[in-house]
Image (cartoon, rainbow, N blue to C red; front, top):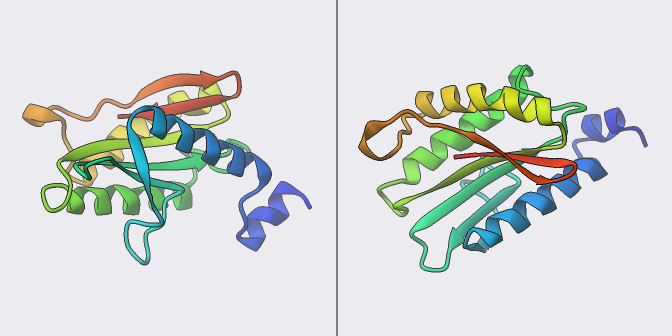
Length: 149
C-alpha cells in the first residue's frame, strides 16, 4: 500500500512508526520513562511520557517529511492542540517538560524550528524567566532529526 493510501486510511505508515519508536527511545534516554496513552480524550500525540516522579512531561510527535511538513496547515494545527494541552497541564500536574518533533529530513527539521517556536508562544509557553521558546535540531541518527525544546 502506498504512503498516500496509508495516510488516507488514517493509519501511520512504516516510516512514521519508525520515527515514533526513535522519538520514544530518545525520550527515555532523557528520563521520560512512564508512558501515557494521551493528553486528553481528543488530544493524542505519538509519544506522551512522564518522568519517574511525574514532575516533568514529554510530548512528541513523529512527522514523515514525505507527507507531514511545517507548511501543511492540518499538521501544524494538530501540534497547536498538543502544545495548548501541554500548557494547560503545566502548573496543575506538571512542573515542566519537553516538546519534540521527530522527522526524517534535516531541512524539514530546520524548517520546523521557527514554526514550533511560534506555536509554543501562541500556546502561552515560555522558558524560565519568560524567555521565548528556542527549539533546537538534534541529529539522533543518520535518518532521524529531533526538533526539541
